[in-house]
Length: 454
Image (cartoon, rainbow, N blue to C red; front, side, top):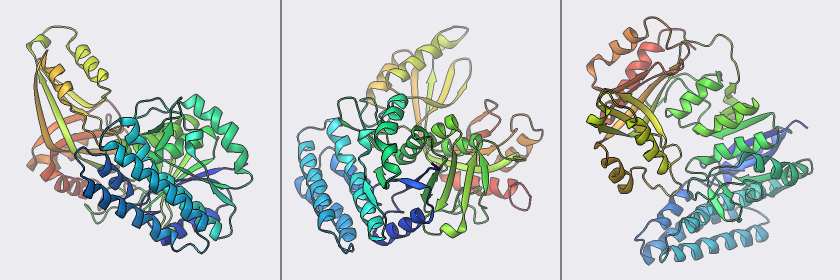
């Protein structure tokens, strides 16, 4: 059986009419049997508000009202909605109960349970929209198959178990009906609800596609594919019809918000094609991400990742000594933090932190406990209000003239860090947040406009 997994983001399932457009996309492709949905736009942020410490009772009630309004605006447009309304009522009651519990106990397990309810509501509603259009469709609780560890807020999927459960419980049903399930959430071995971190719905879709041996994953969002850069920063940015896994992984990692970084991993493992398109304008096509593409250019795109923090560690222990970096990385590992970029000198290490796996509740990575532990063996300086600009392409480490072309553009800007050489697919610079948009626009003009690169 040819099988496509389609994932729709929050803006794609924001309201009844948006869900209707997405249902048409699903029904237009008979191979699409499994649909993965995010929470309707705005719902997850509201649920995160309920999970924050210090929420007052009036604030809690106001947020509950906003969440209910988003869901009922969809329910009310369904012609046969009694059963659906009852299901949504039950889920909203669960939101109420859990948010009350969090007033007294900010347990991470309770928070994950709360945050899962946006996706659980949207899956029930989207299945109802499909049925309204004549499809045989049901909502499927992904927690039956999406097995994770118990690291609430940043749960790690258990790949082998997910495959076994999906093959046994999910696959047999797909020949009988369309199933709509939830992204972003899972369950541990004790059946406690977990979340995969913010932006985890794309990852969920790819994990399920891998477990089911799907032919393709379609990521439907609010833009028509992947562009050479954000069109809001460079009006002449162009869509990319085809891109390799390696290029897409670099773009996702370094800030291209159209795709969650982890999405590529399961696709690469099984060489599953990934399509990125606009649910608002599906006729415009999109970008196919494949194992290999013909004639990949030196420059493919410019990506921007804002809100970067630079951690500078200074210690004379580094001078002609061994073990400092090992101790530093061991400390970061104990706090479940991975390093993103790193540069070193004789007595200094500068590094940025990978925020792609940050907790669903929005908790910061640089905790007081981490900083205190690092301070025991070095002087720590933290710089924020920075942005990472990444030039993505091919053969960047070995093509002559790259530095002259790139750094000529950057001559008038203060570059805080440069990373190049570890990968043939990227060259990264860290700049001040206030300059980031100008840097991206200037690089795009130099590398892509008036030249035939893509």
